[in-house]
Each structure stands twice: as structure tokens, then as C-alpha cells.
Image (tube, rainbow, N blue to C red; front, side, top):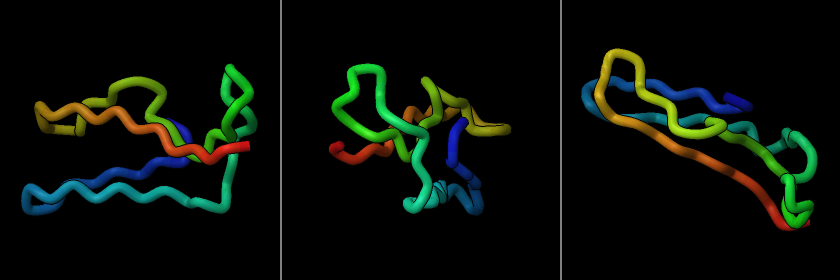
Length: 58
């Protein structure tokens, strides 16, 4: 994962992303990647799956 922190407390998922960071352009070059789970990520100790991409237009 890039720039993504996830935690679960009392069945509530909290996702933290630092919006000041970036990881350069996407493969298409149209957007700047800020955070990504880089595919689907299973939550630790749970059956739920998260797929997250945070980006901004170039």
C-alpha cells in the first residue's frame, strides 16, 4: 500500500491518507497518484476487502 493507513475499531473502518504526498503520474499520465491499496486489500482479521485509489488531475 502507498500512503494508506487502515484500522477497524468496533466494526468501524477508518482510512487515513496524507493528501500532501504524491507518487508521481499514473500509467496513463492523466492523473497524479496520492494513495493506493495497489489492488484489493483484505482487512486484517476480517473478511471485508478494500480497493482504494486517491488521485488528482494533472
